[in-house]
Amino acid sequence: MTVNILTSHDVTKKVFNKEELFILDVRNESDFQDWKIEGENFEFLNIPYFDLLDGVEGIMNDIPTDKEILVVCAKVGSSMMIAEMLSDAGLTVSYLEGGMKAWSEHLEPVKVGNLEDGGEIYQFVRIGKGCLSYMVVSNGEAALIDSTRMTDVYLEFAESIGAKITHVFDTHLHADHISGGRVIAEKTNATYWLPPKDATEVVFDYQALENGNDVTIGDTTINIHALYSPGHTIGSTSFVVDDKFLLSGDILFIDSIGRPDLAGMAEDWVVDLRESLYTRFKELSMDLIVLPAHFMIIDELNEDGSVSKKLGTLFEKNHGLNIKDENEFRKLVTENLPPQPNAYQEIRQTNMGIISPDDEKQREMEIGPNRCAVR
Image 1 (cartoon, rainbow, N blue to C red):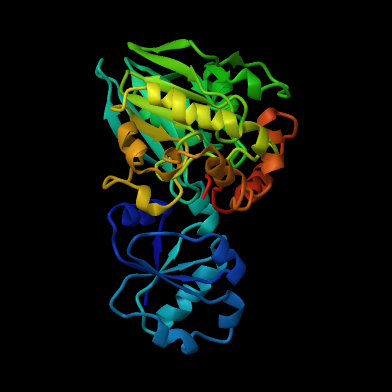
Image 2: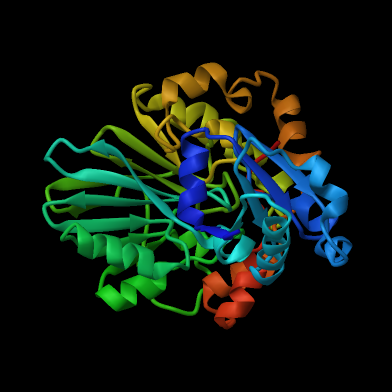
C-alpha cells in the first residue's frame, strides 16, 4: 500500500478545523512528554522508534482502523520507515513531512481584521511553538511585529499581497525564540524598532521604541504604549493599532499573563508587571481586541485558528487579571513557574547580536514548547 505524506500546513488545518487524527509519535518518551503536536480531537500513542525495529505487530491492536493515522518523529527518517511498516501490515497511514523540526518552524497566516482605511492585519500562527507574529498592511505598506527567524515566509507573503515592509518591531527582547526582525529590516531597508530599555547590550543600530511614538503605515497610525517590566523584560512594549487592536507582546495572553523571571529579575519586576496590567491596561478601551505574542494551549484558538479576545473579556475571565491581593499576585508570578525555555540565555544573546549561531544551531536552540506565561 502507498504511504501518504502530510505537511505541517495540512496538520495545522486539521487543528484549526478540530478534525480527528491518531498520531503515532516514535520519538523518545521524554521528548514526547516535553512537547508534542496538539489538537482538540487528536489521540496519541508514543512508542519509541527503537522499540519498533523488529516489527509493528505488537502495536497493531493499539492503532485504530477507523481514523486517519499520522506517524511523527524528530526529523522524518524514522517516521517514514515506521509508516512503511504499518502500510505493509495493511493500514492506510501518513507521515509528517520534515517531522517535528518542520512542525516547530511552520507559520500559518490568518487574517484577523480590517482597518478603518481599508487595510488589514494578519496573524502568523506558529502552531508548533505557540508564537504569534503580525503584519499590519495599509495602502501598500506593511509593518511586521515580533517576527520569527523564518523570514522568507513574511517576505513572500508581503510580496503576494503587493505590500512593502517599511517598519519592523520587536515588542521586547525575546527569550524563547530567535527574532527575524533585524534580518528582515536589512533585506527590505525597513526601520527596525526595539525598546531601548531592552537594548542596553545590543551590538546593532535600532530605532528607539518609546512611549508616545506614533508610527504611520500607509494610512494607518500605530500608537506606541510603553508598558515597562512585564512579560520577560524591562522594556516590554504594547501597540494600539487603529484604535481597535492591542498588540500586547508577552505582557498579556488570552489565558495567562507574562512571566517576569527570564532575566532573573522576577522579584524586582513584579510591581511593574502588576501596574502595567492592573493600572495601565485598565485605562485602555475594553473594546480593544487583544493580539498577544504567544498562546499557551490549543483551547485558546478561535474557530478560524486565530488567537484574540476583547480586553474586557480578559478582565472578566483571565485569572491573572483578577487577583486583588498583591501578595497573592507576587506568589503567582514568582513561584511555581514552568521550566525556563530551552537555551533562553543563548537566544537572548542571539537577539542582542552578541552571538551568531548557524541555522542548524538556531533550530536546536528553539526546539520544544514556549514557556512564556505564568501557569
